Image (tube, rainbow, N blue to C red; front, side, top):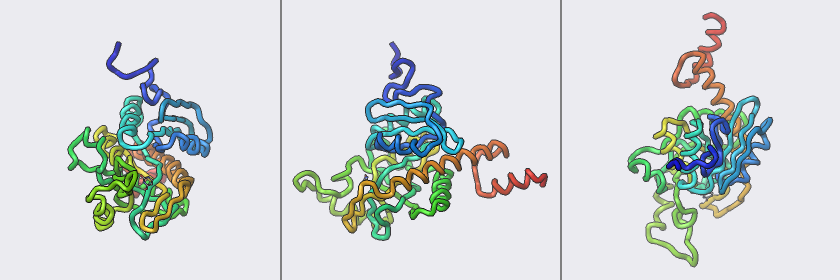
Length: 280
Ligand code: URA
């Protein structure tokens, strides 16, 4: 018996093994959203489903990619991330939903998270709370470029990631249950310029960085906390389209880095490539 939690050569929770997933992985929370994401691909070559983790691997505009649902919150996302890293994934984009606390962000808009306030618990089981939960700049750039090209409304900034959808995001608990700190939570985060609440980015960004991977996040605004609006499907298709396109861009940039012998992508690499092609 091995201590490694594997079943039949596959990672225990996600039921995937080596060769089943791409290096590039989209991470929705909802298992149903994996099918919604892969319905926009050219083809799907692999499917697995176990507990909250539904995985599809296929190609989008010729680029191989995977979508694995994470369930809700840092603990279940952390399990998916651990197991995906073990079988070769290293580039992750969360595609989810969010509630905004700023009045200039509308229902259906998209939020690209540059960094997350670590109000989760899972990331603290990996590293001290002073360690930053920062997105990969390459992924943020790819998401911005894709959102611009698709012409969808988007915002870029800081997100707060919590372990509780209700009290942790300043919503009363059952029967009106509340704590005094909840009164100041939204005003304080708003004053700090935080755009939104969601439940996975902090764990994703922290752990992906500790393990030498890249992570980013795009979320659709389904709740406007200021105007008290809620629409559970708003913006989700746009977020999926941006995320699929961002993976295509990242793959092209990674290929360019390889061709030009660079460790990092920066915008003038595209110019360097065309100069090189022209022998300049
Ligand atoms: N997801 C969250 O975590 N909060 C919201 O308000 C909406 C989606």
